[in-house]
Amino acid sequence: MGKVYTGASTSIDGYVSGPDFSGFDRLFRWYESGDVAFTVPTGAMTVHLTPASAAYFGGLIQATGALVVGRKLYDYTNAWGGQHPMGVHTVVLTHRPLEDNEHFTFCSDGIEKAIEIAQSHAGDKGVGLNSGEVARQAIDAGLVDEIFLDLVPVLLGGGTPFFAPGKGYQLEGPLSVIEGSEVTHLRYKVRYGDAAEAE
Image (cartoon, rainbow, N blue to C red):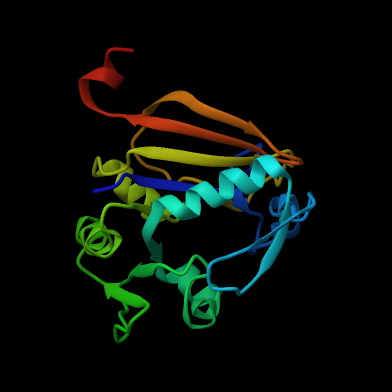
């Protein structure tokens, strides 16, 4: 069974979107900051990355076997046109479930069950969680192994934070630091229990 992780492109002041879902043009500018054409597994889009970002992004996709997202993101993207661009099974955590299909499972039984379902689809690969409320619930339940931050040098001044308010946790690392263009890719291990409290 692979690791459970959460990650997102985030501003220096900790937001994954600005007020009223603004700022994506700045948060994802690094997707077009290089010369390496990178097409996502479904073929839904091609981005142009630096060699370092392409290797990072490709490795993350290769290591991911399933996703858990919230209903808000699912609705905002209009279900990504029928399948998540990463091409993996996606569990939608929601109080308003729809009918399951080959690409999506809708779970209203809590974050633990949602991750369990995702792991059954992921096999030996990891499970990725979208940031915000889904990530907070998973971290509070002690279920997240690592956090990936694509840190972008912008200040949004407000909006949707990477993490919804919850318990505080310490991180170990960074386990890796990869410098792209207009982004720094960081990876941390989440520390729980006595190890974190002893610091």
